[in-house]
Image 1: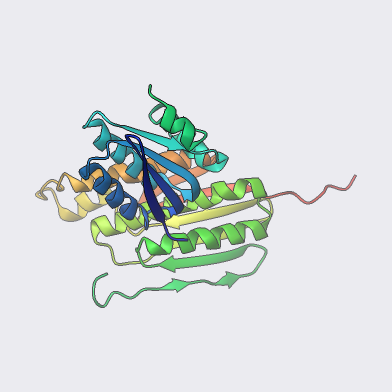
Image 2: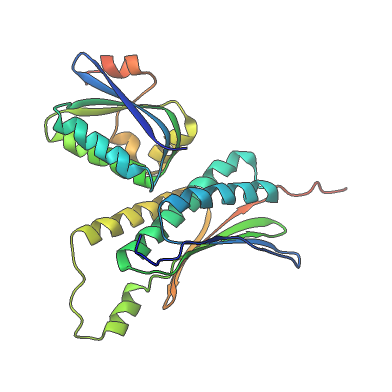
Length: 113
Length: 166
């Protein structure tokens, strides 16, 4: 399955809903889209990963890259994920300490810390 | 892709107690998904626990992504090799790249060889290290080796044992 990304805005947050597989083939497309969002002035991103079927280290690299970019503008990048198999890869790489991970988009949008 | 580069995806079976499915694919990112799908299908058939199949899929994807990255980085045109080996008590996956190790490259290039280019090459190597970190975190039985022909990642998982009779 290919990668899909649709965006919408809630207040000052931009929510990117990602679907499909994020791997070595599709990750460059996600990277491009995140870079574009930041270049267009979206510095507070919420990446909704509930529709993601597969994520590997290449995908993690893209998310870390996105985080670096928004932080350069004092922004934030929050993730929404409830899937155990996706959460596992964040845990084994220690990235649960780097990304705020929320159970719902509403929770991520409301978060301020 | 370079003009004239042959793209290939192959599979074969061997008998004699140890069933093997072997894949060879051109070092293109789009083929990594195919390798994941084949590996998961063969692992399921071999009796690897359903709960572990996600790990198999992720680990073989990481190993293949790493191999593809190394082939692209070093301009290696040989295909990436994946062997899926069904044994009596375990299921093994071997992912081989045809990238010479740093030491082998240096030996081949001679002492006057200039230092490798920094920058993007370093990033690529860092990404491949991240892949290895994920594999090490996921798989209990993993072995990474390299010789003058290239690197090999060997991983294995137990298969559900046949019920033992009293």
